[in-house]
Length: 536
Ligand code: XUL
Image 1 (cartoon, rainbow, N blue to C red):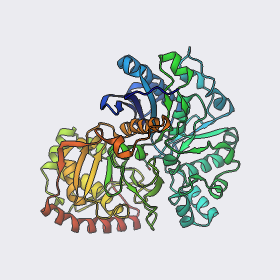
Image 2: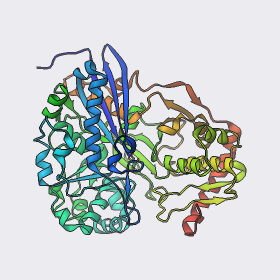
Image 3: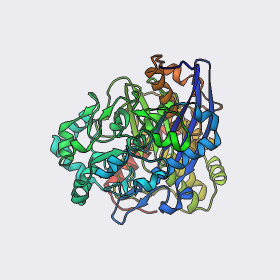
């Protein structure tokens, strides 16, 4: 029988490209507070996995992967750290959910699938799952090696428009369907040996529940396999992707219905209660909720490993040219997402190229005029998702590579102009943007964002809006499951207010400059896409 508690403790975990982060909150009718955040950066905390920025780049062009055992090890360490840091609060845990880097997939063999429900509390998690993966390295969203498979899938279902209408997007290299197809073709035996294919999100939820967990609507939309309107697997896409795939996919489930309770493993090993496990979702759907964007009309821009622009949509709306994609949102509506590969790693490349630290990077940005006197950089250090660039290389126009400050301004302006130009379809006339992610801590960057988008920019209060969004989803789903449903507006109340002293208004003079420069940037993109030569 459910015991009424006026406030309960909720945990949100964010398994991103480079780290695992926890956000622990207390929420209910009698109050709301953030208890704390805790992060485990992968490269430095778990050097034994040999990752750089959380990934391992393959020998073949465009191949980028990560070991799933790294995520298993991090989850185990995280729960241990959390009960040490907040023992009283963790003992009161009511529900846990999570957010994960999207599109990445985890391949379990029959032993691994069975193992999920027979984890013993005496031994750590990772050794128990060794030998459980038919694919020891999981492809992640940065992989761009599946162009052939994208075209094959599109052709098989009747064209890219048909695929986009049903699944929310044309085929993208990083999406799970094309990745599964490439695996089935390149490693047919290992594919045959695969009993279950999870997303990173559903795999992590399965570890917590000690059972085969479902894929939620939000993250399921990033696969080119789910019908975003009916929120079920779309048989044509499943068949077009790989043989016998239907039997290897977990069920799809509403993001707000529990996937079980914390497995005996967690209860016994860390003395945790039988808290509800709520399906995990993608980091972008979770971040939208953690930023407080539970209604249409505003955009969230996350400046992280990827830069992403997201917005809630009441109705299905997509870009005719195949930019970005439409997902079923964990609030039950739709959301648009446009992803840019060259986010924080590209900013870091420019910082390091000129021997700067972040303070000097910001000073360089602040010392240069809006519009950079017409100088432009197309920041394609890695293959780019938006627009589609498979042969990377930085392009400069009117920009001297030895001019440190101008190059710093050029990358930030280039990133912002690309985001503004390619996301008009998502929310025309947006007047407020919620910025989040690591680089949103840089005031000079946010002022450029305000000027380029001609919109007010506010910054989320939380360090990690995806982890907070996951915690808020746990709160929402727990209340629903307890027979006391709560609206999304009430869920975010008191958590998602922007930071009061981080408010950037567009400067009319700069806005005028960018109206022109954005056109020039768009033409430079078109020209560059037509000619393959580049410099770095
Ligand atoms: C979204 C995408 C990235 C990852 C990063 O489509 O590819 O934002 O989710 O974690």
